[in-house]
Length: 318
Picture: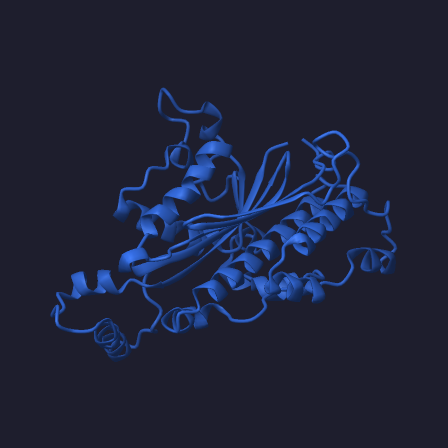
């Protein structure tokens, strides 16, 4: 099976970029530079939402479904020594694309997340060869000519919001609403408009947790989409949802406990609609012989947090 990488990003205004573009006095504080930009935008009847090229990437969160398990991973700009590590955060995301060549899944990723990652990556000199492969170079993958990450109507990257709206912006649906309508927890805690305030208050870990739950909502909607287009039958779909639930339950962090508490049991709704399938099992076969399903590995690195639960991959069709 092709690995799946559902992702979400959280951003803050790039005040350093604002300083450069505005030719700001070095004596001005970040708050003064930002306030001057907001005042100018208001005078031009523009919102305080910065253009994409001035959206500094603070967190990239991924839910990665591969042959060996389901992994929740975040790349976070820790600003060690007072310096932004945005370049490393973006590079690590594109390195995963290069290493695994996954099916990318997002909600509004074509309209926001990927343009931000591309423009900010360009600023920092990030390398993303596999991501940009469109099958035109001699050394490229010819399959990418007909299905690549860049073209809107190709499916190597699926922007679920865009696709579900038939590429009509007036039909776009919010992630929170669709997740809740499908029986998933949806957004918990903050929303995107509160991220910058949380960052200024030093609540970076809260932002990371919010981003991770959005990535999980996106992944769960992807599973529902795979069922909708016939790539998962009912029993396989329920198994995938149960495995995602097991992964969430195995992560010892409060936001996942809250997420799990807000998540109704999928099998109950299936029985209500007369679509009851095989009861989801933890696993048909563990990847390491008789190893139990709930083998969880948690590591904390300088700019990443990671939790992996090993699960059976046989329920996803090739």
